[in-house]
Image (tube, rainbow, N blue to C red; front, side, top):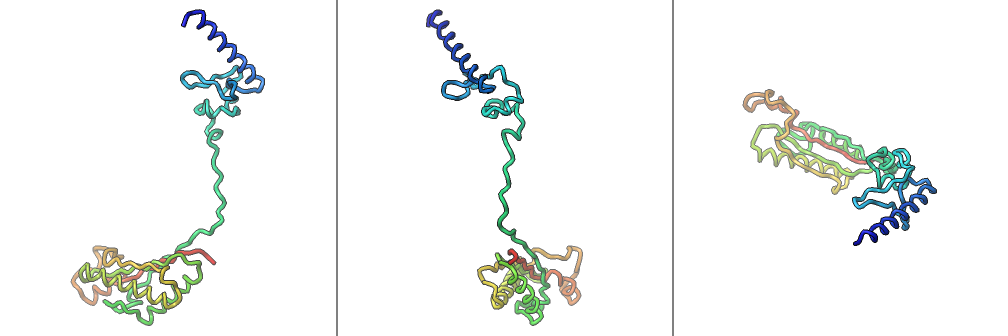
Length: 218
């Protein structure tokens, strides 16, 4: 490209930019707008600014966030989104711990009459909700093997489920699980010694069924 042609092209470009800048000024724009209505940019992608440009003015220009986001207050370019209205009631949960000796005889998984009364109270609470789920988790004390206690805790949870179903709670809403002796309530330094009536009585808090009810108020 010869020198004369290059000068002519530069002159044409300068004239075009000047015309666009004049148009932008007439519209109080702080960036040069090209013939397509887009912000004119340099070869490196920077927006061409007019003589009206200031950081405050850029914040009011439609192209401000595109061109100078780092110089504009964050709340202008990223306004906080309005939280959607909460049209649904949030589920509430209630966890009820029922001592296993109130439900079962020691080393048994058959509900006692006193245990049924306890479950009646839990079932009544569940029926007072738009029920999502009932979680019954059986636990045992440390006496006996891991395998034995795991099965015993599962049987106790299953017995609670069976009775709750008989009281009108849908079976598909009741989840059961056995934790065996893995989650004792008593501390390691409590109830020391071999199996005895005293130790069995001391370990009573570990023999339990945790029942959690989750649902929303009717």
